[in-house]
Image (tube, rainbow, N blue to C red; front, side, top):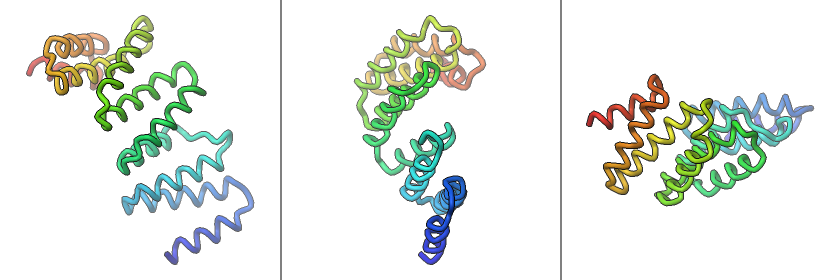
Length: 181
């Protein structure tokens, strides 16, 4: 508590947002060390408020999503991702949708996950630059078919597609393990 009083005082006396963000980064590191993810999210939000264009770096966004998942704040994540999708560039939208899928899976909203996975496959399958990402999508869809729907044929098909799309990727290797199993 004493430490936080001093940091609050330093923030109130900071003359610009860059100085404030240096302090918030320090507080974020301390919160992470203490595994206080609720507080970590608070500091990431403060960093976002003080950043140019109110945008987070990809690293901070990943942490924000992870910590909110750890805290069970799934609706907050989905709202943020939807905002990012609506204002995002074409190449970022794919990764945002994958995060949305992962959040749906944690929430056990399997139908929503499946629909979004199939949408990504339909929208991006012709674009060769997304091979690795599509490999991940097919892996996730294969796991969904295998673990939640017990549809071994569709699961196997998606694992094969995943392993063929990006043979050296981590997703392909995991898919090959499922195929072997």
